[in-house]
Amino acid sequence: MGAMERVIGTDELQSGERRSVFVDDIPALVIRLGESWHVIEDVCTHDGQPLTTGEISDCSIACPRHAARFDLRTGKALCMPATEAIRVFRVEVRDGAVWASL
Image 1 (tube, rainbow, N blue to C red):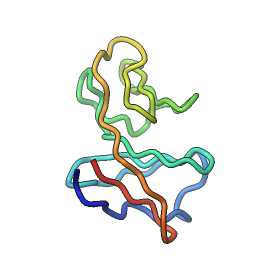
Image 2: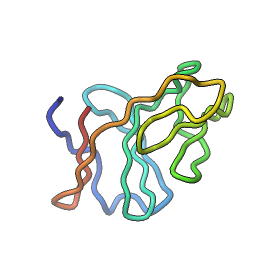
Image 3: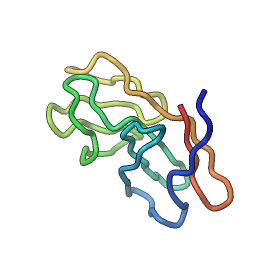
Image 4: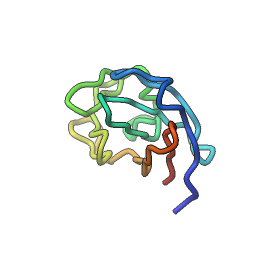
C-alpha cells in the first residue's frame, strides 16, 4: 500500500460535489456525499473514458459515455457494458483534510 497523500481540504467540497485530483500520479475523482468521502480512479474500465462528469446516485457513478455504473464504495461494476471494477482508494479524513492511497 502506498503512503497516504493529502488530496483536498474538507471545506473545499459540499455534499454532492466532486473534484479531479491525482493520487500517486493516477487521475482520481474525490466525491463527497454527505459526510462520506470517496476517491476513485477516474477512468471507466469499459472504454477508458473519464468518469468526471458522470451522474451520481445511490452511492454509484455512471460513465457519461455508455452509462456503465460503478459502486463508489467498492468499485464494483454494477451494469453493462462494464464488467471490471474501477480502483477505489483507501480514504482517511483527518486534520481538516481528505487523505487517500491505493
